[in-house]
Length: 576
Image 1: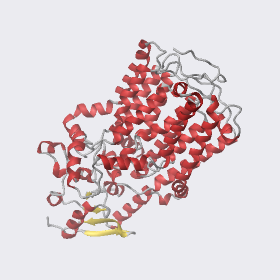
Image 2 (image 1 turned 45 degrees about the vertical axis):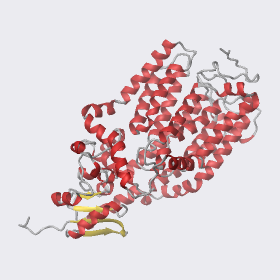
Image 3 (image 1 turned 60 degrees about the vertical axis):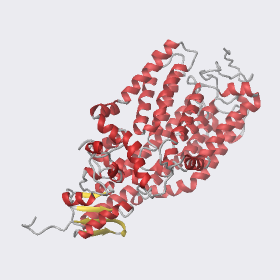
Image 4 (image 1 turned 90 degrees about the vertical axis):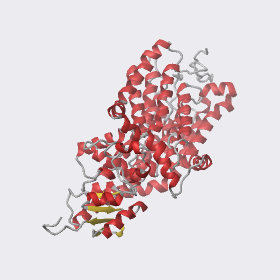
């Protein structure tokens, strides 16, 4: 085993062990005193290093200015997020969260994921008692962005990667065109798992990167991993790799200590964080698996095989979509940064010493998670852009961790590369985030505020009351208007469109109707109103029924371009 050499000038800041080794605890607050310019100034903002904490340098003007720029960009992101148009997926997550507590989220409301997001968002609705459902959901997403950026800062601080590494990581995250589009802005399970995954890695580093592993930090890491998986099951790959890390890293610790202080607390934390999912499975396993596994393995493929909508089904089509997403904008920049930070020590020291310079268990773990994120992205069929999110946060994190392993003679070049990438990421995101600052200053333009006001005005103009039952495939609009929503439409179109493909033995686990049985359901239940958003082809049957059965149409200020509420004409007294 190689001895640790604390002499940086000798260039011996290599890991202890060529296997999984703890990163060296040598000073690496950024660029050394010999590095001039902006990069040298910014590098002093973070001085905590791998394996422990050291004295933190006072932030200088360049660091403060860069932090201010990040804050401005974050505010632009929040403004963009709040003004972003409502998406189809939000109908499922927001409606089920709002109705949680009045029925079973699976049998009664058709939810098809693990229950964490409805519980989290539903808890916020219960605590605040707000009727601004979309607005509060978007604020939760904004908070998750702040948590993700904070996780990058904590990891950069812990690993003593230097402020340029954190700044670049934050820029690569906020500058990612995919993440500042629908997947990262809507109230869904596409972005929310990311901050919990990053925080799990932070607590794992805190737990294992010390003389004696911290069982509490490993326990918290286990809880956070379970929450990330509970928000989106695609992140299940986190669990085994994080568990392996507690066993294999760092090898300097005795195996018994690694198991007792690392693996066991991690497992206990995972079980604790997994309690909501375990309860959902144990309380009604048949309904749970019908709504989750069988929904995605049987009903979704059946629906899309008959659908004429554009779809990506084959492996070749998925590869082309992945290439479009991962080899463009900030994702490509993260790959460039990763390659550059690996190439620098190889160029200076040769293959053996260069590989040893970057080889550490945090780097190997994060690289493995990025690879698994790539693999899991190709599993769902058909494929959509949001399915290619999983590897992105780990690629960004790799840039931060690799900077922490940079040799002393490479730090000037490394920070120059990182700041260049950050600048390009700013160019990628600027045109999208800058208008968000204007949106943030104008609350009337926020989508949640607009929809709430529009639906309440529409309900008043139609003379509807809050207890009126509305049949709709846009449940968020109905709930924002204060209407009652039948369980059959709580999931929007996601259950309705696949209901005709339900096998007979599974029908008992679902509360729904279908395109084939819609007319008979409306005849039997006679809802007080029918709401059509005008954006879904499947809604045409609802509008046709309303017109043919004497419902009166009401529109808002946007006329037919906005939602249309069809209200049933009250029948004369004495008639049924």
